[in-house]
Length: 238
Image (cartoon, rainbow, N blue to C red; front, side, top):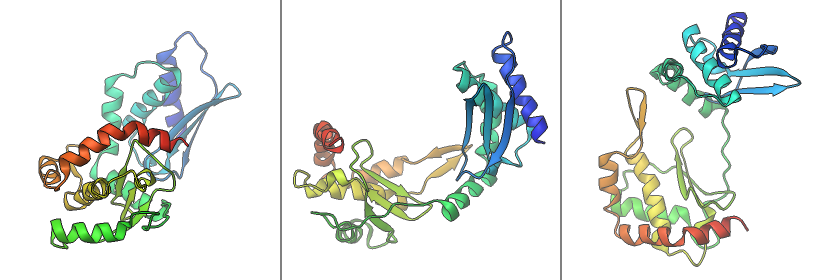
């Protein structure tokens, strides 16, 4: 099958650049975590690594992936049909479950501590759980991020059962209600799990947004984050 897949990459290369000789192409499956693929040029040769999770993917979907990867490599416009035929496979329920299991069994999470220099995430979680959820939210592993970040202030990892909050917020300049709001937002991801409809993921549903606005200091927290994003960025780069 590798020979057939390799031929697809040669075909894609010729389609994008018919006047250029096709360089040697080497395709292999690699045990990436989740659905990942790479294509690189080294010493005038092309090396393609396809995630092992796609070793049973139909040739039609492999063809779509070939056009996607080669198109990105050559910085060419990728035909829409290529994305559609590939996405139809990787967004299927079977592959999605395989990817989740791969991440759960082989993925690694960096866990520091729930106790920061100023705020204790365990204490904040317990307080919010009682106040807003009647203690119905199962407690995940709570941790401050290893590094300061500003683009993503919080993240809920359903696969590993973790909530990570940016260490940028563990400072005296950050009001407690802002940290509570970010934790509350991630707790809502547990209360409102991601929905998959026709291959698309929906993380922030209407119900999610409605419940988010129930946070007592919703407007104040949103306003503080918007006003202080530049400060958070400066702190993260120190």
